Structure formats: C-alpha cells, structure tokens
Image (cartoon, rainbow, N blue to C red; front, side, top):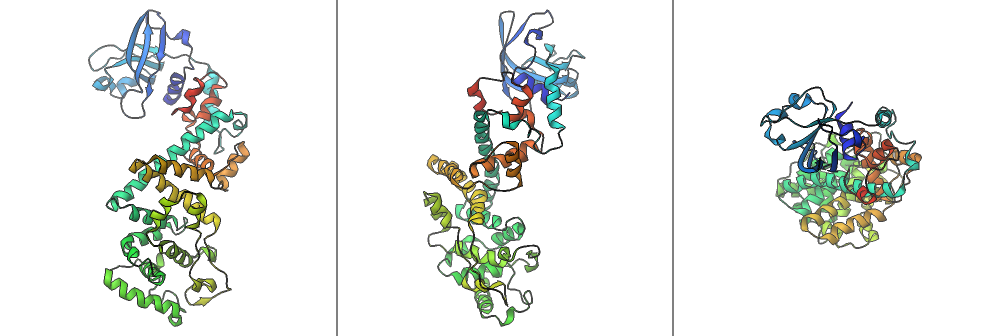
Length: 440
C-alpha cells in the first residue's frame, strides 16, 4: 500500500463513510477534507469534521501505518499539534503529538478494486498507461485538465527564465537574447549556442544592429568559427576574410574572448541545420532596429510574430554550408516549422513571463492566444496521444500533452492526474463538476 493512494482516497472521499468512526463508534462526518499540502507539515490543512454533533477544525495526517507517525518524527514536531484526525491503512500503534495528547486514529476502508486499478496503471509498461481508457473520457474533463497543464508548464519554464533574468541584472533584452539563442541550437547545439550568448552580450550586438556584416562577424568570431585552420578552404574565401577583419577590430574594442570552435557539432545534421547556417540566420533576426524583443512585444497577430523569425541567411550561404566550400545554390531560410518551434519553446514563454512580471494581463493573455493559433506540433509524443484518443488542435494542446507525458505519465503520477483519478475511481463521483477545474 502506498501513502499517496490513501491521500487520493481521502481527497476524493472514495472510502467507506459508514466505517469512519472514532473509538466509541461515533460516526465521523467529513465536512471538508482539507487543502492538500505538498510541502512539509500535515498532509491536509484546514480540514473540518463533525463527531457526535461537535465540529472540529484542524489538520489531517495520513500514513499507511499509525506507527509511521513516530517513525517520521512527527511526535516531536509541534507542527503536528493541530492534527485533529490521523487516517491510516493499518492502526498498529497508539500515537501522541509533541504535547503528549493521543491522536484520534482511524483506519480507512475502501473498495479493493480501486487499488487494483491503480496498480494496473502504475505497472503498465506503456509510457501512457491509460491509453486504452482515454478515448472513453469526458472531453470536458480532458479539455480543462489540458488548460491546467499548460499553465503548469509555463510556470515551470518561468523559473528558468527568471534565473536568466537575474543573471543578466534584470535586463529583458539580454534575457530574451540568451533564451532565443540557446533554443536556436535545436537540441544538438544548444550548449555552444548558450555559451555564445553568454560570451557575447546583447548590448554589443545592439550597437551594430544596423550593420549585418558586423553582427555576423561578432557571432561567428565569438563562436570560434573564425579560428585559423578550423575550415581548411576558408583562407582564400573573400567573405570569410571580411568577417575575420571585422572581428579582429571588434574583439579588440570589446575585449571579446571566443569560445572554442570545436564545440560545434556538424555530424549527423542535415546541412541546412549546420550551425554556420543557423548563426547567419540568428544574425538576421538580431539585426533589427529598435531591438527584436520590442518588436516581439508589439506584435498583435501571430502572422506578424512569425515573420520576425522566418528569416533568411545572408547571400553567401545560398551556395555554402561551411566556409570555403561551394554547394548547390539554395536560399537558407528558417522554415515555418523551425520558426514555430522557436516561438513555442522560447519566444511565447518569455512573452508570458514578461506579462506576468510587469502585471500586464493583456500581454500574458496574448501569449496564450498565440499558442492556440500555432499549428499543433507533430512528434512521437503527440502521435502516442493521438493513438490514445486525444487529438491536438494547436500548440496549446501539444504543449499541455507533452507536459502531461513528461511530468505525470512517465513519473506515474496517475493519482494526481485528472484523467488517472477518474479512471481509478471507475465512475464514482469524485467531486462536483466545477471542482474539476481546480488543481488536483
């Protein structure tokens, strides 16, 4: 028996209510089970129960065995002095709080089929354990659960964004630049792109935003890609030589220390995704008068926002993938799919966080609208959900479903999941319909 399962039973009142009695066989009526506590202290705060006509208000503590109260040191912790009810799977020992008062301890009785359904889910080898049940779920419950999950995912991303914000001295332009640049690595080159953004502050790029050649020189040079000998045929290349000359002047002016060029990965990448091409495209995004982040915040329509990131590399890269070696001429543009990946993973979360930080509901609300207007992502995670019976209509849905898979399904947090909770209860009334919109 797992303690979290007893939490689930108590929270959703899925126990035998007639069997919930005190030592004198007085019925214990639960008026309110309490607020679920995920931190230290009792498991449920502010519960209310009625015993023999007397109403009690306080906290509820839950254990698989009553003796665990002492084993966990709660008998010495005054934070547990206000526990009005100790709910257990097995009452194997009388326990007392730090004041020396005996706790009212009751064994919880329940339908064994509930636990069996829970065990069946957590032991299912499939990542999405409930894939055979989801298509029978009420769409209303699923939709509102996805809304909650998206908010949770954005809050999770907010923590990382705020760390970067603090690291930059509370500079939003610098924060946006670092996060955008990191995600421009598209997993394979995430780390060197992040190192590049750290080594080359945005305030330097901003001073040269009206000169794309200089922006490219700053980026390629700081990336270590202008190191002698890194590209064998580059020495006779006019464009490469221009970049070297520009960077030599600029690096001396700003005391720039390049990262190592060997950090960049080229193998197993399609040539259009080579970091050389990506850096030129990044330069195109950053060569914007007034600053890219300001333009992002000004965008009121998703098409305007997308345009800022559907850029093309400089003409040199039309017939090159690396310095000094010609190839078939093909313009190197950031395609729709890549642009939307940047929007979903970097740009929109930052808009959301900025809106919350500045207290501008219109801005963070716009971020949610943008997600709902972007195409649904198409990857193996979303394919699994499609097979399970959930069809994503937009990036709003796919981000929520990715979060559900990563944070709930893979960690087998079925009892904390609205879908899992309903499946385990097998149709029993969990709570009022409107309460399904609240945090689990």
